[in-house]
Length: 220
Image (cartoon, rainbow, N blue to C red; front, side, top):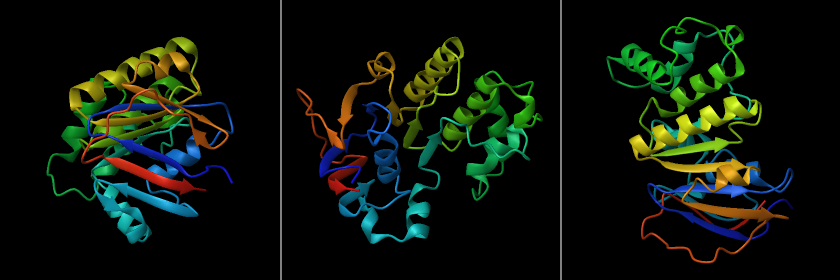
């Protein structure tokens, strides 16, 4: 058992860090909150919708255009260029300006001159900037970031985090961030410690009437 009957609510527009050592269950919790995995017990809701009431396709439909992801290992498709990777969340969008919008986001992250480069032609920091642009291109309500600086050197990681928080603030999204870096966690509105499958109690937590994501009694 990785997680043990924990409860968590994340408010709209809030940035929340989940910290803990390797193996504490941080990525497992993130996967559950995002509806990528299912708990063995408990209830999960996103945007007021119970994830347990939806099958895999239903959960994917709920996330589409409303949820963005930034992963430690970038998760870029190697055969697609930078702009094609950013366009992926918009491929089912009825918008006519998909290419222009993707280009604008790559320019915002400083990669306007690297649109047609494949991931292998980009540095680690550049690949993560592509991933950040991809996470925000659909103007999501919620962004999940799983150790977004884990594969980067300290200086490059600091620039990526500055970028992530800047775009998050400008876009007004909800951010759930998994990290082992306490300094990074302190930049969030709230930091919670995950230890041995349990969230340590916070000193004071305000609860929203309409949380963006909600996990009650979750066990996995």
